[in-house]
Amino acid sequence: MSSSSAADEDFANRNSSFSVYDPNRLSGEGSPMMMSPWNQSSSPFTKSAWSNFSETASQKIPQNGLIGSLVREEGHIYSLAAKNDILYTGSDSKNIRVWKNMKEFSAFKSNSGLVKAIIISGDKIFTGHQDGKVRVWKINPKNPSVHKRVGTFPTFFDIFKASIRPSSYVEVKRNRTALWIKHVDAISCLSIDQEEGLLYSASWDRTFKVWRIGNSKCIESVKAHDDAVNSVVASVDGTIYTGSADGTVKVWKREQNGKVIRHAPVQTLLSQECAVTALAVNNSGSVVYCGSSDGLVNFWENEKQLSHGGVLKGHKLAVLCLSVAGNLVFSGSADKNICVWRREAAVHTCLSVLTGHTGPVKCLAVEEDKESTSGGQKWVVYSGSLDKSVKVWSVLDMAIDPNQMAMMHNGQGDVNWDSIPSAKY
Image 1: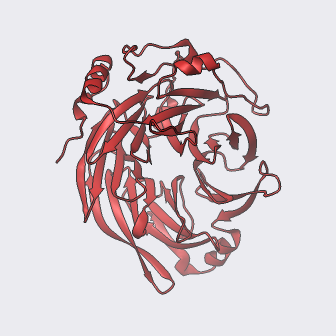
Image 2: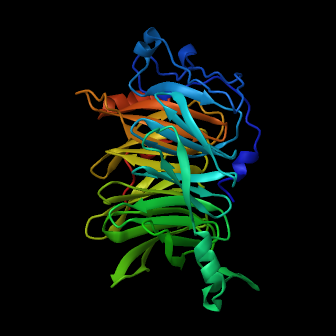
Image 3: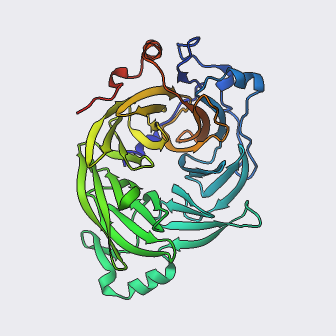
């Protein structure tokens, strides 16, 4: 897989630094307060503290800056999910760690190894794994630090029932069949439609599957692409987007006939040589973003129909993850950086580049900062990396004028600012 090959690289340690507009500081030099405790070793069985900075140091942090950093010798971070100041991290160890207020709060263990995707829904946590299964965990209402596994998709009973029916088998490779309700390769991504109670799982087996959360049933399996499906996103109005290593982004519409649900292909948004590695959709479903292995982020605007809006060029290497929050778009890349883009109408401006990871940025989670001020909406951004660390950033949504853009341009020699505002096609 193109998106995971970077994990094999040997990443040299270096001091943390970050790049952001600050009139007094245009060279992007490293600051002592931003350094992470890279040499700090910790046992997987002992609690690790986040590194917190002193009050005097925090007063000097610009509007977009690092709050804290966690380093664990447990494995690369492949998945993140955040809700109500609780952070879940999944890695290539068997542990799913839970963090609260920047301290380790809890952990629970899966026997399946690598955790590729995490999604939170109410008091349940869904995790997608390398072994092709989705596991369901529930938070104990009396003790929120305790998580109990309450299910697996597909269930053992459903597998047993399907296995005795010849019609349940489909061809997955030449001369090889498998049950249609089972993924036969790693799950790469999960998405949820809360209103309909549906969970979507995308897999390297070229399919996405649809699960009814209420009864744990697989209600549909869609052979979606000619190569691994790297991303699936459920948007409003029953629209589903999938992105694949085959270089395409496809749009699917959910259709319901009585109790039967089917997803029909309606459009191919993109067809290119390089792999599609990440997708994200804003809350209203009006903008769709696609990250690719060539480092570009394409986007489409959905007014009456989806039309290509432009390309964001901020990365030198593959875009591995995307997240949208309010007016902001976050792109994490194999170049170890996170670009923060602000959308105003159809124009995207790069507010800042968050740097400090020493490995590819593999996953992102964004939460609104409850301490947002009148100066603008603030967000807490979590980034997980193949350097085995999670970093926590504070990002302010603020408009910047052309003069500031010019100053940023002078201070940022390594970013392609020519794409700002985004090119219209």
